Image (cartoon, rainbow over all chains, first blue to last red; front, side, top):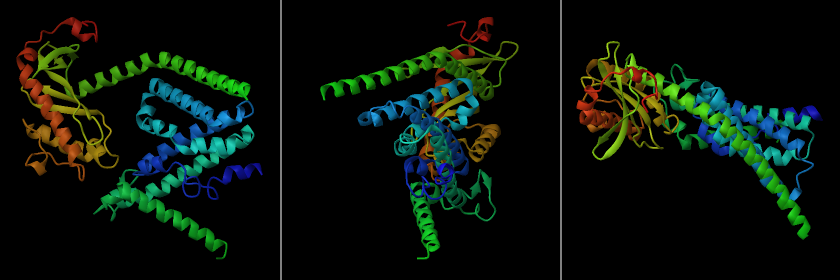
Length: 198
Length: 203
């Protein structure tokens, strides 16, 4: 059962398309593949640390105040990581810095702490975090792929022939984000229903 | 019941206290280093916007009742090469912090956007290669005295769908030129001193 915790985040319980958590940062950063990659990696690292930590303290936290405690724990060490990166790796901070404040308010982190890490062993929680992180990264990249390609005619900043001629600007603005998000969600549901033979 | 509430309160207090101590400790540890990194980045930026051998420390100036700080650059013979200003025009999503280098003839030589919070994919393209190259071409051919986007009958190719950001950027450039015109005498009369080579000594 343990290994399933790793893979469920990628398709069956994909955080972007199934659980639909962390949609605000998703729509904000999916204007380019580079941003999606940066956000995905940063979120995965934070998720692993927070799941591990929450899982370790799960037995001593009183049930009725667990949410404020989780929020405090997550906000504290995300801020610490942010400061340390700014101080000791300014270059990394330049490229990932804008995502870190977004991660504090990313519901995936709190969502997994509450739904999984508070009830499972540290090892399972880490596997869950890795799976969810990769699922989030894939979700972001799928949306960013269409938005950057159609809205800018580029992928990872490189111009793509044909698409670069006359990009549809609306795709990198907020409405484009909702279009792509909704269509991809529907597509995933469609594939699942077909597989189930309906 | 009461006892349970007190225990919960104490637990929450302990967690908050630990968080507070950790954050204060991190802040103490990293704040000076972060500040230092910023100064290094700024010093590199000022060399980029105004090629010079050395710079003065911050000089206080007054323009239209507003107090500003600027730095004067010197070549290797101690002659004034121009001045560096920092301007922060208000864009679409916040301030566009820009460093502008103006030479002794009062022309903008180069600029560098230090930070901005414009819409990603739209206003944020002020830092894109396309916009930067267009600006470079404009500045090297005949650096204008007034910056205006083409839509307003000016000379700057605005970023597509980000006219507000582009206008703000132009305002920043004009602001720097305005500062220079007002402070021209002081800037050109700034005396080169050995102290000026060591950042912060004259403060």
